[in-house]
Structure formats: C-alpha cells, structure tokens
Image (cartoon, rainbow, N blue to C red; front, side, top):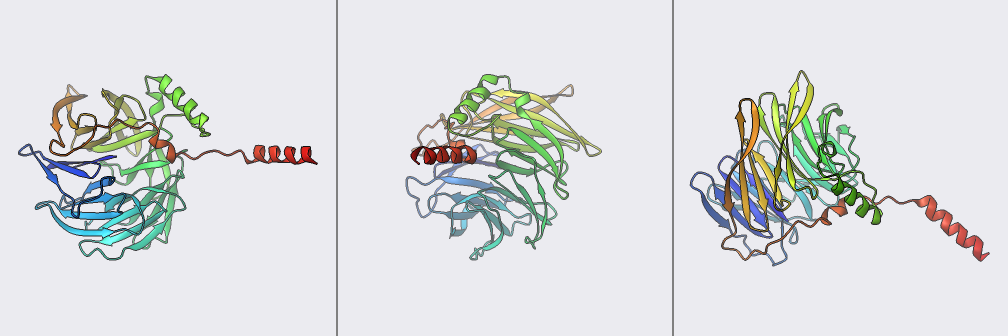
Length: 372
C-alpha cells in the first residue's frame, strides 16, 4: 500500500514503512526515518498534511501507531498506539485535533500535541472508510462499507443531522467541494461520484464513470469474476479519487477506476445550485497507479513499479482545459523498496457478498424430507 500527500511546498509519499519528501522549491528529496524502527511487515495506511501545513500525520497498520511530525523541522511531536487498527485519519479544521476512523466503526479524537487517551465521538455498525470535518466545524462526516454517509453535529456528535443515502456499494472517499464547500462529494464502489447538500442529505448530482469507460470488456470481466466469488456487481469501482478547485465556479476531479489504464479527469461546474460535468481528459498510464492527488491544479500520480511520481499541470488554452506532463520525480533511491504492481483482488474485501437464504433453506428442507 502507498499513500500520497501534497501541499504548496512538498510532496510526501509512502511505500511500505518508508517515507520520502520532495521539496518543490529546491527539488531536493529527503527521507523520514520512523523511530522506533518498524518491523519489515509494517505498512503506512494513511498519510496526511494538516490544513495549515504545520503537521504531518502517519498511520501505521501493523503496530497501530499514530505519529505526528512538525513539518518545518521534521520533529516528532506525538507517537501513540491506537486501541484498534484504523483505516483513515484526518485533522480537524483548526489543526488542534486529529480524528481516527478505526476498522470496528468508531471515530476517536486525539488532541495535538497532548495525545490524550482518545475520546470516542461517534460510531458506525460497519467498517469506516473515511471521515472529515466541515469548514465551519459544525459537522463531522463519516462513511462506511455499508454505502452510508453519516452527517453528525459537532461537537455533540450524538445528534445526527442526516444521512446521505444513494450509493449502492461502499463509500471510500469523501471530500468537500472545493469551490463550494457547502456541498460534499463522495466516491464509491458503484463507480459513481455523487454531490450532496450534506446539511439536508439531498443528492444534487451524479457522475457515473461507467458511461465514459471506453473499455466495456473490463467491466464485463470484473462482473463475471465477482459473480464467481458470490458478489453481485454491475460496474467497476472507483479506487482513487481526488479533487481541487479550478475557479470560483468549478473544480477538477481525478478518478482512477479499477484496472482501467486511464485516469479520468472531469470538470464539475455549478451555477445557482445546479451542477454539470464534462470529461475533459483521459490520461493514459503504463501501470495502474498506487496513489493519485490533485493539488492547486497539478496532478500527481505514483507508480510503485518504477518509484516515480509523475507530475502533470492543468493548462487553459483558448478556454480548453488540457493536462500536460511536467516532470518525473524519482523517489526511494536510498531505500530497499521492492517494485510492486496493483493487486486487482485487494478491493474485493470491501464488497458485500449477497446470500440467498431462501434457496439455502429450501435445499436444507429438501434434504430433511429425503431422509424422512
């Protein structure tokens, strides 16, 4: 597993438990050594930069450690062991707390830099996949494997504002719409990105990537493979999703759909609370990416086979938006990293198997009758 985090000054990338930082201003790469040294099987599950670019947070899977660094001097200020393995971390809007979404369905809150014992602030009945706080700090939004997006009041999270319901599979990414932050965007295993009025739980717009896929054979093959495993699906899932503001009325979305060897770039526009989208580019990739990130109209794509981050810039030529290659950033030169390709089976665990209990009951009944 690999993670990517980007701000105005640097690009951070993880591979297993290794961390490299690329400084955009002087083009220098620095490595970060985790202390104490993790085991060989350790993996960075999540990697994020605080809203004010002051902190970097690292989530480790095997040891269940949460480590926070002060970015300017790369000094460790917090190192705690979580009670359970977590899937996602996110800073609060004031960068004074960090929210941890764990794999049992709970969201914990830790103060920075005190690192208290962690306060459980809300829970789901399913595996949590993401969490975020709104810009006005009034709501905490969480999503899970069971297609649900929950909007909780903050700090009194026992008060549920609403649910955003409409996805047919797991919801793996949620982000506020950058050019209009009173709306939420979400991506899912059903292959769609949805736009929500999150205060009222109203669906405003849907981008269905299956309508734009040029290779329908991939979708048919995936559906057949999943059906053999007892999982009923109708579209390719979204694996990676990132979004960035383009102008006052629109945002740029980058989407990597399972095994589709092109990154889909959309422009999402809004006017008078009406939304529209257009596919502006399909960026070919040699290998399915391990991570993508859009930041300030630059797209970063990490390939774990050659340890390169490809940087692309969004250009506006005669009112036409184009995506142009800028440079390769070579990382992990000094670490003993092994090349790795995307595992197409890894995402299967997020899908729920459909059980036909009636048929199973009828078969058991038939056996009983035959014996009697």
